[in-house]
Length: 358
Image 1: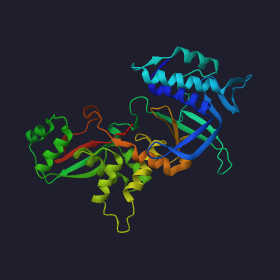
Image 2: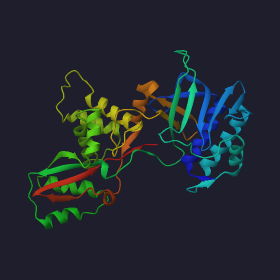
Image 3: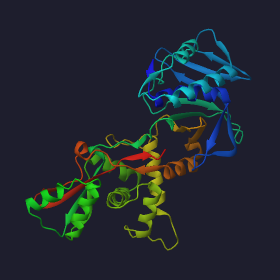
Image 4: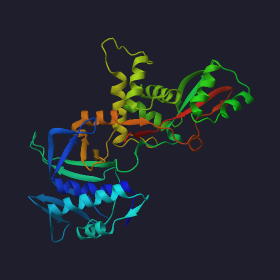
C-alpha cells in the first residue's frame, strides 16, 4: 500500500482523532481556539466493501461494520498516530509505504488510504456539541501541512479571465515582440509593455460561461471583483488573498458606497472562497448546495489536527481568507498571458489559481 504525504495524512487523522477523543477548533491563524472542543462520539468511514463505525467508549474504540465488533484500546491509536506522523514527516519519497501501519490498518478494517467517497468528504465525525446538547454529523475534507501546499481552486482554461486592451493599435510584429518577453515575471512585464504603450485593460468575461454564471450566482458583482484581484496579482507583487482584497478595497474600482466602512470586497470574496471550498467547481453548474463536506480538518506540521466547519462559519471563512494566495499556473498549458487579436480588437487572458499558503 503506497501513498503520498497527503494520502497517509488521512490515516494519521483517523488515528489522531480516535486517540485524542476530541476535536479542537481552529482560528484564522491556525491556532487552537481555547476552551472550544467537541467530544468525538463516532468516526464513520466508507470502505469499498462496507461502512465501518469507530465509536469511542471510555478508553476503548469499538469498531463495527455489521459483524462482530472489534475492541481496541485508545492508547494503541495514540501510539500509532505518533509513529505514523514521524514516518510521514521524515519520508523524502513522493510516494511510500509504511508496512507496520498497513498491518494495523488491516486489523481494524481500514482497507484503503483514501476513504471511498464521491463527494469532497474524506472523514465523517459525529460529535457532542455541549452548547446545544446536539450530536451533529460533520463531514470534513482533510488538508495536510505535512506535504506541499494544496490548491483550493485548480487552474484550467475554465478559470481564465478575458480582458479587452483598448486605446492601443499594434502591428503583428509589435504584438509578437510583447508576447516574446520571457523574463522571470514575463506576464507582469508583458502587461507593463502594454501600459507603457498607453493601452488599457478592461475585463470582458471569463473564458467559460458556466464559471461566469457560477460566480454571478454567488454574487452578481463577483466576476468584476475577481477580475480586479487577478489583474492586481499579475501586475504587482502581492499574492495573498487578504492583501489583494485590501488593495482593491482601497481603490474601490466598483465604486461601492464605503462611507460607512462596509467591507463589500472582503465579504463577497469570503463567500466565494467558502463556496469553492465546499463544492463549487468552475466546470460544473453550481446549485449552491454544499457537498456532504461541511468543512476542513487541517493537519499542522506539529501533528495537531484543527477543525473548521460551516457549523462555525465565521472561523471557517476567516481561515480561508487569511491562509490562501493566488498562484501562477502554466501559461502555455492553460493558454493565457499573451496578447491576441480577434475581429480587429486586442485581448489578453489572465488565469485564476488559488493555493493555501501552508
